[in-house]
Image 1 (cartoon, rainbow over the protein chains, first blue to last red):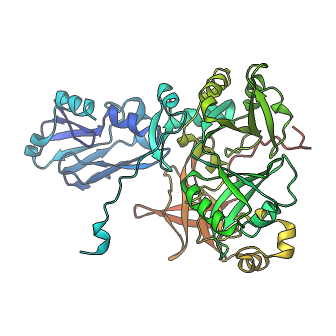
Image 2: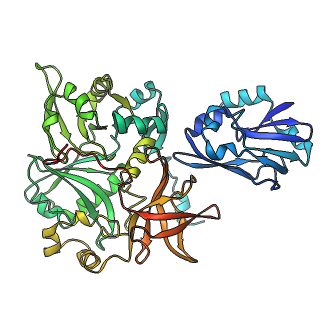
Image 3: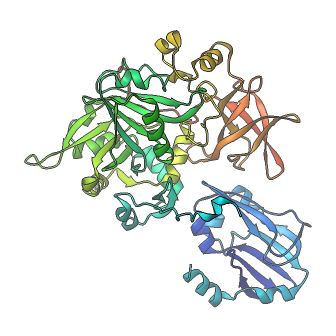
Length: 123
Length: 382
C-alpha cells in the first residue's frame, strides 16, 4: 500500500484500485477542535479536486477535496458520532471515505510522504 | 482606463498591539482581526472556552477603541446619537448603548461609563475609526474626543476572575456588575492607576482593565501567574459570547437594523422613550409600540451540523430570515445560532428550517442566553 498527499492536505492510501482518504495531521492541527464531519454517500461519483466531504471546527466549515476521481465505496460513519476522531487519529481511525479509483494515473500528480513533509515545512 | 486606476492603493498595514510578542511567546496562533494581529487561540478553542466558564480567562481586547469624551454637556450631546439615558449615569456606573445613524440604524454597540473627567466610551475595534469620525461630525466642537490609543485593554472573565484579580489589584471585589473605578496596582512607592470595570462579553462574572500600554505586559504576566488564569483567544471569545446571546457588531448588528430589531430595546431608556429626540427615534419608537418587522433571536439547531452566518431560514418555501452568527457551543454541547427572523415566525418555540449546503436542518427559536449569565449583580443572591 502506498500513501500519497495533496497540497490541500488530504492523504490517500492506495491498495490496488481502491483507496482510503482522510485529512493530514497538519490539517487537523490547523482546523482545531472538529465538531462535525460530513462524508460522501456510498455510490457518489467524485472528480479529482472536487468537493468530497465537509469538516467543521468550532470556528469554521472547510471542504475536503477528492485527491483523485472515483466512486465512493464507503463513508466513515464513526465520524458522525465522534467527529473528534479527526483530531485524535487523523491518519488512521479518523479517515473520511473509501473510493474505487477511476484513473490510477491521477496519482502521479500527488506527493509522497517526504515531498509532503517538505511542502508543510515550507508553509 | 478610469481615473481611479491612476491612484496606487497603499497596501494596508496590519498593526501590532502592545501584547503582540507576549501572545506569540504564549504559543498563540495569530490572525488578522480589525486591522491588527490578534491571537485566535493558544491551546485550542474548546479547552479555552471551557476553562473560562469554569476558571478565569485573560483576553487581550486592546483592538477596541477607548475614547474619552470631555467638555460641558458631553452626555446630553451624545444622547442625540444614542438611545440611553446617559445624562442620568452616575460616576462609576456604566451602560451598554448603541451608536445610531440618522435613520436609527445601529452603527456600533458600545460601553459608556461616567468618569470624573467625562465619559469613557469603549467601541468595537473594527469600526472605531468610523465611530470617531461620526462622533466628531455630530458632537459640538466644545466636546473633545480623546482616543486613548496609548492604553491596552484586558478582560479577565470567568467565575474565578475575582479571586485571581483581587490578589493582583486589591479592592476590585468591591465592584458590582456594570460598575467601574480607578484602582492602584504595583509597588506602594510607585503605584500605577488602572481603570477597571466589572463587565465583559462572555456572560460570566469578570473585569475589563484599561492599562497604559507600557505596563500591559507586566500586568498580563501577573494576572496569568495566578493559578486560575490562562490566556484565551478570539475564537473562544466568540463562542462564549454566542452562548451568552450577546450580539457581535458587524454580524448580528449593522446599520440595516434598528435597536428594536436587534433585540436591544432594553438599551432605549425609559426617559428617552418618553421624550424621543434621538436619531431615528420615530422609527425606533414606532417599532417599540407596534413590534419590529423582524427581530434578532436565538436558534437551537437539531442534530450536530453547525448552521453558520449567511444561512437562509425558511418557513415552508418562504424565506423568513437569515443566520447572522452560528457555530458550535462548547458548553451547550451542540450547534447554536442567532439570526434575524420575520415577525410571525420569531416567537420562542417556532420551528423553522435553515439551509446549509443545500440541505434543510430544523432550527427552533429559543430564548437567549443559551447559557445562563453569571454576573455579580448588586442585590442579587449569590
